[in-house]
Length: 470
Image (cartoon, rainbow, N blue to C red; front, side):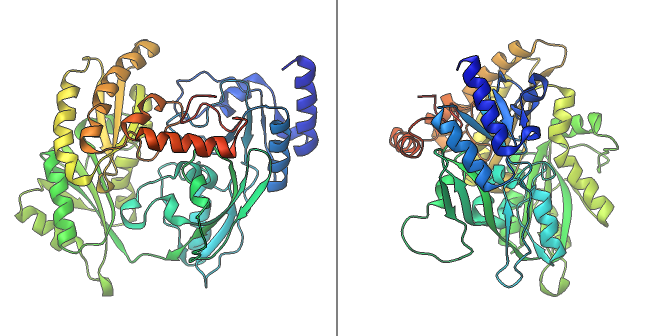
């Protein structure tokens, strides 16, 4: 693009969204064109902030006509490079689109624009006496549109499902600027293909979600929270099995290693261990009380002690302790960033294969360079394991990334044996394109490419994510 063409494009963008809603200042673009990965080159052409679906449509039409690539941007909390703009793309941020319609307490739905944060939807539902089930550590920053684009999972998936299960309808702007209105509140609509599902988890490669109708539900019964210390990873899956067989309604089932626990104690302000003696692994178990307010947690823990799978356990006695116990899990990501250089990935496996996989994973960890710590935690109740490679802050970042990638490749190579996935909830983005074939067959990948080519023949929609550029 020549300088004159670039100037004309900027003038046209400002005419659509207003002068103050087009950013070209390089320092700001370094932030707006990046996500939490922080390892890819960032080089956007500009960032625009439309205030309506019609403005998004006009921006997309303009970019399509000029063959200018675009990168949709939400809260930029992703960990796969899915929101990185590194090749003079126009970043389209929906942060101005934050309208939430009145909650429908009869149909148990709420309609909102895609720039609304997860927390804002939770609060709107709560104010109406209802509950929005998606819950993320980054709920104050993550946008609903980004959650949909990545099919976010989160802390409560074991009970309520991920983002896909919360979406009833969508409004989407396609790469050529046309608007696809699928924003229905219907819970049953058996009339051919469910096209909205194409855009849930597509990582912004097929279109930009601008509005959504989300499913709400009655607030859950009182929940109790426990942190459980265990001696071996196999005890974690035993705890899950026993909890299921006892009929407990599990609303969250998380785990973290003592290495992760120690890093949180070192870096998170006010963090403290709830146990007199540390253990190799810990479980965060949250369960609903039974009907009538009957406590489930105490008899369940008694059973776990009887079965010998629990070294120690504490139960949150009030809201402050509830928050404190949860913070041991939720502060891990931030603490890792303070601890050193980090390379992150999230994988998933069939739950019954976790024990065998972890044993092989530990063999690979033992072969890792001594200056790389491998830190494990995750939503283990749904088979989601977060693997974090952490190097010393004083070391060279690029050398660390290369060394960590070699360990990562050996661990990923184990996944086909267990029918696992290289990405449980953060997508493929730029980070895992080379690894896609470990989880998807050639036939699946070819079909996905065909869908991409059909909806985006010009290849301008978040190019280079999931697949290489055309």
